[in-house]
Amino acid sequence: MGGACIRRAARYWRILVDQRIGVHPRQRARLRRAGAHKARRVGRIATYCRNFRRAETRQEGGDRYRGSSGKLHTRYGTVSNPLHAAWLTAASEAGYPQTPDVNGFRQEGFGRMDMTVAGGRRCSAANAYLRPAMQRPNLKVLTHALATRIVFGVGVPSGLEYVRGGSTHRVRVDRELILSAADQFTPAMKLSGVGAAAELRTHGIPVVHDLPGVGEKLAGSSGVLFPGGLQGADHPVFVHQSLESARSSRALAAAQRRLGASNHFETCGFIRSRPAYPIPTSSITFCPWPWRTTARPWRKSTAFKRTWARCGPKAVGGCAWHRPTPATSHASCSIT
View: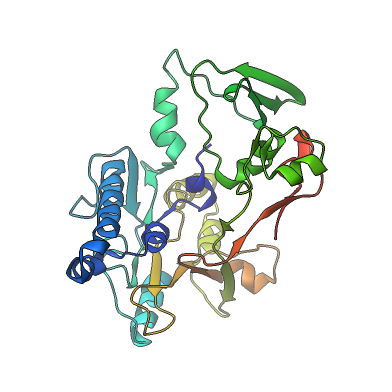
């Protein structure tokens, strides 16, 4: 459990929301001067900023853009690994600016990266919000369960089917059913009879609601991994080397506690791929950890990785079926 907080290696930044709305904090004043028709866009980004502040408790303290009393804890890494400083220095020498906070007023530039970690443990959305609420008597959480179909009554949901442990179960819905699985729930929606009527009839599914937009206009962010390495390094500046240098079990346990409290993506940068663009279009992160430990020996001990990702995806695709069966409804969905 935990959603994007789990899949994104506890990295924390707000660029996708800002880019999707099309307004960067530094653009607010310009938009206000542009006229009243821009006011709604300015109001939307202001609302998102308030929501971020409300959700966050930043270890380094809150300000106009960062929160200090929320449930989701964020913090910087220690950047004790000298490769982070070397990488930031290289960015400056290449002509890129430095920024004190990539989640603050100025996102463009290179600097330290936030992570969702508290007390040396991952602070995912589940740890921050769900687990504290699991003590309530009116809440029951089922893990290893795959929702496969919404059961409809007279135009409204009356139940939900899910597969768990190889068996299909059904729960009754008395008041409301909240769907929060985003595009991953698309196959279950279609299996429930909600989607393009022609496609549903092709697979023999009764049509409950003809809604062609289901499974369409899905956007995904593209990214590239750049592994690297150094030869001749004679001191443990790499994470893998630091663990290998701890010979005794006590030293290894201490190293794991120290190193395990960070995701090691402690520095990053946001840049514009073209000077004409008003806001950053690409994100770059750095980590002194090998991508694959099965590579050549020098890569295993002295390797690092950099990742590049596009901010604000423009590629749009759809979700089409190969074999619409409940047990493989998610796996049989392909992005075109």
